[in-house]
Image 1 (spheres, rainbow, N blue to C red):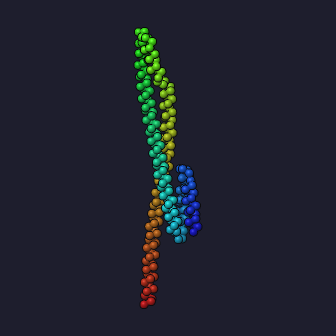
Image 2: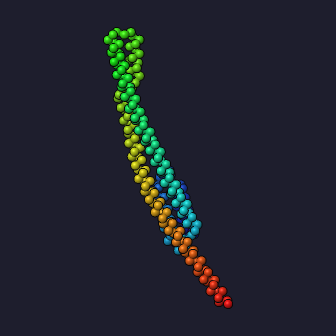
Image 3: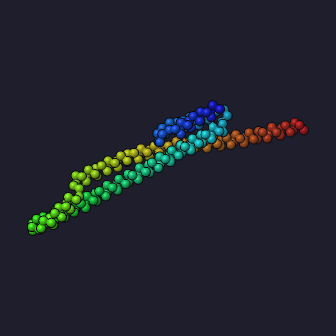
Length: 202
């Protein structure tokens, strides 16, 4: 009975834990509950079901971490694509500025009318200068680096969780096989006792 109450407390703590926070504590509590259940003189079926539910929650957390890692990877790729777009736009702007500058020089050289001169000047002023574009690229690179670091951390954490869950699954699978063997042996003993009683009555 105490084991069941302890498992309820552990399960409640796991459910109340924050988004992604306290994962190590959750697995520690799950492992302690599992070991206590294994070491009990008479393993309680209800407690075993509670442990399986807690294991399902751990698997769900692994799936959630996987989704977060994928979302971060998509965001990182988006930043990389934006960086490429900015570089292309900067190259195009530089070419347009060079072209407009050359045309402006020609306009000055041949004393073109003032309206044509103003049109070329507007083209030059329309595009951001190189310093502004470089600052944007530097900011995007910083964001990409930060996402890369976060992704590496999540990948490492995810691998640890997968290994831990795999170990627990193997242990629980072995325990289930053991319980089935015990139940089978108990059934055989009951049949033997019944047959002995019948023989004594005869």
